[in-house]
Length: 491
Ligand SMILES: [Ca+2]
Ligand SMILES: [Ca+2]
Ligand SMILES: [Ca+2]
Image (spheres, protein in one colour):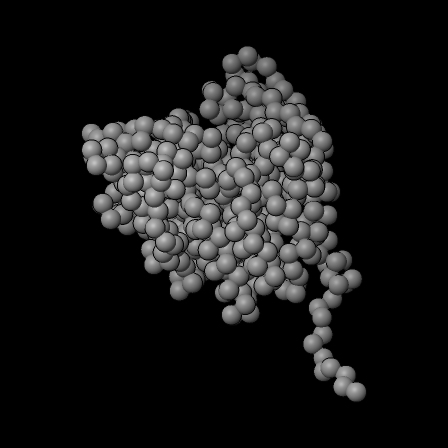
């Protein structure tokens, strides 16, 4: 049943979400918590979330068991697959109430393989190696912290429960999630509902104090933490002979030898490695997304992601046309003008483009996937048990690609990283997104219509859909069939 409702939107400035949400380009931020002042800083490796918007009750009135527009965009409306394939989400871990969103009857999570990598952090005053301010240093890598973020249900050693909902949101795009509001439960479909998630925490947070009692909040991960997570998955693949996709919705401003070596190790064990391109727009891509051997993901959007603006806000039941190159209209209630789009898909302005000044050729960027206004569970800002956010970021694009990679592996488990990368690039090139302009309602500014432009290969090979990927994979598999492990000829 479709219920017309009056819409009320709560818009949260991103800065008010820190430390709950870290914006890639905000590295220093002061805030007050329980009457005490804190300084927040981000480490080199951080989540690739750009901005977020809490979903209000008004928007939650939906038909039952909706297929969200992003799942429709990548043509995964029907799939109920992924059985036997693992996706390791290398991220901020899961919220302590993750089973509320991912009940065991619906979502496979391999808790026994879940793990978290972190360090103890201590005050040194100056010259410390933990972050750029040099105030703190960190101890050896620890692997005993578990995979839950430091939220209220799992506070840190000082009793602080800030944590991050990022890893939970990323996971929800892959598996789907339970959604309870207004006394009703809904199951929101993911891209590959039957995969098994391995939660691997490689981005943590720390509340630490200097001798004067000033508080500091750090979030993110060291190179050692990220590299350890990748190697851990490489070891699992080798030990158990299973197929695993690594999803890294994270990045940092420079390449790092130990992370790249870990990636190569995982790939050599048959692991597929997917990473976000970063949210720095024209400034370039981040690493590990910018390593050419990684499958990197740009953030596309739907030009109707907030309906035609204004009139048509009921995103759950908005149906994405199966032909993405069809026209649509966007209305700006501020100027009372109508704008015409030729395509339903566009490239977001924040999506990291390859930058030749950083040594990034256009080939370094692989595919685009939905990364604008993607709904999912996130850590609440207030004292609520559950909350849901629409999130923009290449962080949200990457799990679509990881899920599609998993669905390919389910059918063709002998494919390695190069095979999957080739197939995804080929598949995406059928929606090439070679430069363009799009008009989109900006929910952050009263449905003002914003113009997005992109050029050349800013979207990589193009927009990835599951049906195209499976078609290319089928042809590829005929040419590259499963190797037969027959007896060796002995002379
Ligand atoms: Ca579709
Ligand atoms: Ca690549
Ligand atoms: Ca559709």
